[in-house]
Image 1: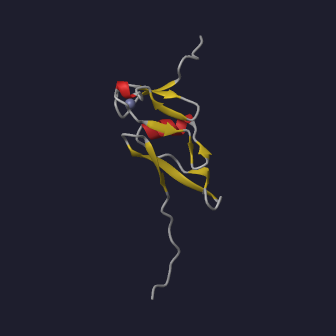
Image 2 (image 1 turned 180 degrees about the horizontal axis):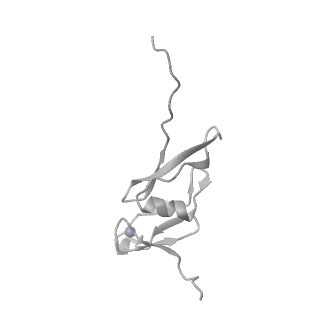
Image 3 (image 1 turned 90 degrees about the vertical axis):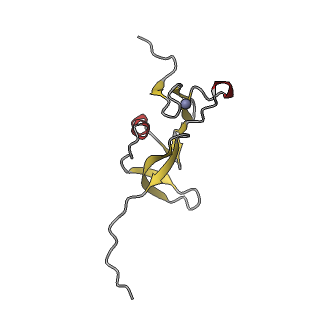
Length: 110
Ligand SMILES: [Zn+2]
């Protein structure tokens, strides 16, 4: 059993006609060519310095917010941070960072 031919994560959630296929840096719609309608759906494998696992990408595709992921790196300060991810734009697969709302310590106002 050899399954080396074109790994896919299933149908493209944006157009529903193409498949999400793997490239070196991203999972993208197989109908990206303008002649095919030019679907722009792309999920980058690396987000803010952190490489995502296939499981995490599957969660995103399912419309879920991932668990908190550690190992992101602020491109300016280089400080590591953690966040959850969700898909922000279902047409392009743009990913947004979701920060946990932590309980703020009591602050004395005024
Ligand atoms: Zn598509």
